Structure formats: C-alpha cells, structure tokens
Image (cartoon, rainbow, N blue to C red):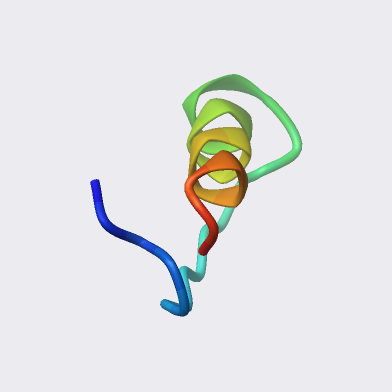
Length: 30
C-alpha cells in the first residue's frame, strides 16, 4: 500500500483488527 503523506481515520483502534490496521498504516507512513 502507498500511504505515505496520507491521512487514515481508524475507529476502534484500541484492540483487534482496528489496532492492527492502525499499526500497519503507521508503518506504511500514513
């Protein structure tokens, strides 16, 4: 995924798939 310089709004990022999505997006530069 190309997420550098993008904004991602993730709800429910405290646990489960939301948390994993937030971590993935952060690693990708979002």
